[in-house]
Amino acid sequence: MADTKPQGFVFPTNNTTSKKRAEHDDMDNDDYVAAKKSMLLSSAAAAAWEDPAAALASARHEFGEHGGVNMSIEASATFTVMEPETLRKMFSGELGADRDFFIYSRHFNPTVLNLSRQMAALEGTEAAYCTSSGMSAISSVLLQLVSSGDHIVASRTLYGGTHALLTHFFPRACNITTTFVDIHDMDMVRNAIEVGKTKVLYFEGMSNPTLTVANIPELSRIGHEKGVTVVVDNTFSPMVLSPVKLGADVVVHSISKFVSGGADIIAGVVCGPASLVNSMMDLHQGSLMLLGPTMNAKVAFELAERIPHLGLRMKEHCNRAMVYATRMKKMGLKVIYPGLEDHPQHELLKSMANKDYGFGGLLCLDMGTEEKANRLMNLLQNCTQFGFMAVSLGYYETLMSCSGSSTSSEMNPEEKALAGISPGLVRMSIGYIGTLEQRWSQFEKAISRMQDSGLLNKK
Image (cartoon, rainbow, N blue to C red):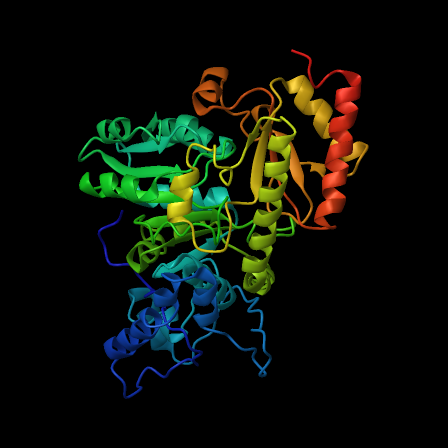
C-alpha cells in the first residue's frame, strides 16, 4: 500500500445531506470533517453492530436535485468549479468529495458515492467504494494491499475466478504468490503466514460452492497476530454475516448477486477503513484510480434503489433454502446446507450470524456423478420448471449449475478434490418467486422421474 498521503480526496463519512461549501466558509475544514465522521459513528456504523437493516435505515439519505425522495443521477463524467484555484486544491487533496468537490467520475461520482455509503452501512465499515464487477473489487483491493514479491494466504475453496487470479495471473503479471490452505485447520493457516512477507489472509465467509463456513473471529485473530490484513468475500451471505463485526478488516462483494437480485447488473464493492479506500483512490498509486474499474452512475442508482429491500429478500431466500434442504434430506438426498444440524459448521454459523436472517440462500446437492447432476438439472428446468440452469446467484428464480464443470472449472482435478468439489455437485441458489409449495412440488416431480428411470440409484 502506498505510504503517501492520498491526493485529491478525503472519504466523506457524514450521514446527512449537504451542499457544496464555499472554500472561505467560517467553519474550519478539519472540524467540519471531524463532525461528519462523528455523525457516522453515532448512527450508521454504530447501528451495524446490532443489525445491518438498522444500519441501512440510519445511513445518509440523499434527496433529488428538486426535492425528489430519490437522489438524482449524476451522469457527468467531469465537474466544473467556480474558481480556478479550486482545481489545484482538489488535486493537492485540500478539497474533496467530503465537501462535495468532485473532479472526474473515474475518481469519485456522487451517485456511486451514495451507493458506497449504503454498502458501508450494510457491512458496518468506515468507508466503501463500488466498482464495475466483483472481480475488479477483489483484484483492486489485493493489488493495493500486496506488492511485487509479497505473499497471500488464501482458502483453497474459493470462487474459480478468484482462484485463477491468485494461482495464475498474480504470479505471472505481478510476482505475487499465494499459499492455499484448509481454512478450518488453524495450525495450517498460522504456519502458512510468513511474517513480513505475507500481507493478506483471504477467504470467503461462506465458500463457493461447497458452503463451508469460515471461523471469521479466529482467523482474524490469527491474521492480526501475524500482522496481516484479513479480507473476506461476503458475496454468499450479505445480511447473514457481518465479517468486520466479527474481526475482519476488509469485505468484498460481487453485488451482481444477492444485493442486485435481478441478474441484470455486474458490479462489486470494497468495504473497509477510510484509509484503505482513500489509498485506492490516490492519484499516484491508487488501484481504483489508476486501473479504472469505474461503476456507471446509472448502475449505482439502480442498485441503491434495491438495497432497502435486501433484508426482506434475504430472509425469503434463506427460509426457502432451509425448508427445501430439510425436505431433500428426508428424501435421502445428499444435501449440503449450513442450516442443517449435521453441517460441520452449523453451530459456528449460528454463533456468528445476525439474528433472524437464516443460514444462507444457497444449498448444494451432491448427485455423485456429473451424469446424474446434468440429468437432474435438465428435468428441473425443462420438465418441471423448478429453476434455470445458469451460473450466478441471488436471483428471484432458482439458479443451478454443476460447479465442477462451470464456476469452478478453472481448478484442476486435484484442486477440486482438495476443495471438496465432487463431479456431481449441484449448486442451487434458491429463488422466491411462486409459492414455496408450488416450487417444492416441481422438485418432487423431477426426483420421481429420476427414480422411475432408475438413474437416481445407479452407481
